[in-house]
Length: 322
Image (cartoon, rainbow, N blue to C red; front, side, top):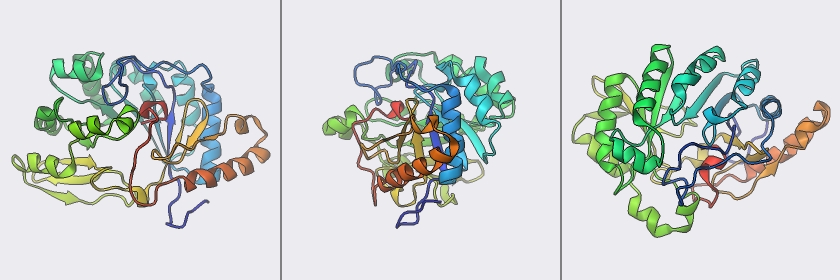
């Protein structure tokens, strides 16, 4: 097991199944162009082998399947089948929900019981303006069908001034009414927003403002969360919970346990670091050679983590698994 001076280790792995996405969200890409799959994306079995080897070398316990948009990937079924056979504590998937309804049988067969759905507005026009694609009704229908099949749903919303701040309370009310747990995610200085500081500041909505808005409608208190959780969790009296991933307001770098594997075979130990470590060739080696080589790369990846606070990077978030 690899541990750094702050006692951090890798427990959670996020695998970007593809860089392709059927949305072009304003906070992800600046030009409105949808992300496409990289030509050198690894086969599903190679990515699954990477997961298995990282379980052995890093002690990975939980897997989140991400993208781009994982449900558009032709590797999805094969990857799900492979990782379902691994002895992971938990496998979850993050999606924009556009194709969720049609993919639910495959997800259920693979044992997926928890989903995170990215949804930034319940207003149809605002939804289209932010996502620059998609159909809101399809997303909501997919979420309801998944819930009816017994899946737990968390909704991820990025509140932004000038775009969807008026949707904070409607989204919270919708999630409370439907039994979904809402997570507000502070806007991150990634990609073009890392380059354009003014654009970031003009749109950023922080923890204090969010809690003040919610507090005008609901009484709540802070709830317990795991030591390496990214979200601050709050309980609304007599109802349910919501969370805030306050990467700017209350950084969680000191306890971060996340490791990312891109669809092209690169390990990223930290979103604030431009460093990356290629394991595609390692996965082609015999296991007895691959594991020691991978362990050396993991030491470097853990060393990439920020000591105190998130500082952002010019990498596009969805390319490395948001």
